[in-house]
Image 1 (tube, rainbow, N blue to C red):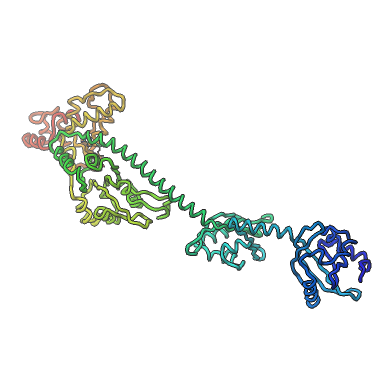
Image 2 (image 1 turned 180 degrees about the vertical axis):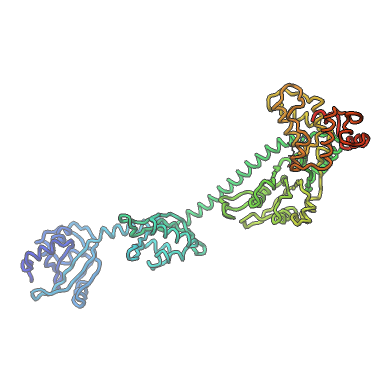
Length: 588
Ligand SMILES: Nc1ncnc2c1ncn2[C@@H]1O[C@H](COP(=O)(O)OP(=O)(O)OP(=O)(O)O)[C@@H](O)[C@H]1O
């Protein structure tokens, strides 16, 4: 038997210094030598250890298995395996064994070098367990040599046994949004930008995998990236459901809020509807038509110059209809940018186009059960006209970026100050849409053709703006009324309203007298014609100027007929025809 003393003190020192447990055993399994680390781990003194055999430190070894093991190592020269050892106090620990066959001094022996792996296997087990509970797998890519380490759970998340599948350029084949993954990885490896994103897999049914990736730096060099994959499908499904429910609530809430706003507007519209000022017979006929058609669901097309009160009539139509409890939604087709009209009217789904960051409920959906007022319908782009026609005919439309057809019950009131027939000829308005809108046309008369309404309207606005500005105006002077009556109001009622509002601000007292606020016909005309007057208007103003010079005298010496080199009778006739009145001459 070889005595350890024969190994020599240096060799013994060397074997004791190694960070491994080392022992030699003979054919019978007796331990011939064990180094200090082994003694410490097994809790025996060196002298005690050499009295033990392999069967004392490894309870799973039998004489048969030892014999088989001996033969295997003798034949192959060495062996590598894992085993469980037991120390003096009965505690087990796992070791990785490197066994080498050798003969020394005529005796054959196995030298075993052991590495205690109980702690690492403990943590490995722990990690495996935790990973599988949390459905989290880890990986690590060395950017220097391209080697990849992958944990067990990561393999099982991606249902593969091949760790090479985890290279970023391979893993993207499992994911729907491969581009996003690629971009994120490039940022992580080039610019050290970490990411945390959820990716949907390509499987059917698909799953959602959360990928968290962190670059690891040495100094300013990125030398590896570590990542985590987590199967979040269950959570995501709950999220998705929750998200959908929340979205639904949000959209209903928005709808309610908007409806509410419109209802508020509708309330004020009601007051307006009751306050449609009318004295003239011609306008009374218009209002008769409004009341006639209001209770039906018929589409109405209101035409007429700007400022004649088309919107007011639309409100009256709604408030006198059976839909009055539902919203009246107003859309001005001229004020919306062309590219937004479609989504404004019909709504869109998130992502339907660049900038569509959220779902949007369209005005037609909001108006469901109520009325939509499409002001300036002539401005509706031709490509949208067919979509509107479909709503009018079938009560349905497709939301932008949506998958389902939306059905609505909406009454349409459209208004325009443009001549749609002319637009049809020019090819900018669809003829079929025109006929569909023009079921019940209402022509709103310009103010100059219902001048009898001017005094009442002016009084109405005087009171309104006086109260608003905290002034005490009660009435208009006769001269003011006459001057207003003489004026042609190219801007119709809106111009009259603005004029009185301005007058109330600049004047004071209880009676509104004529002042600088009153426009002269030439001013408004030159605004209207861009500087050039019509021939008739030029004549009118020329005559007024001459009459001003002559203090209203037409014939005889110093009369206007003389200045204008006209026959007095002809001038009288012309004055009458042009509607020039005394007041006009003196007040303008
Ligand atoms: N008969 C009326 N009685 C009282 N106010 C009126 C009457 N008609 C119109 N108005 C008022 O005149 C203003 C202009 O009317 P409205 O906006 O309805 O005109 P519109 O024809 O729709 O104009 P546009 O074509 O420019 O949109 C509004 O403030 C409206 O309340």
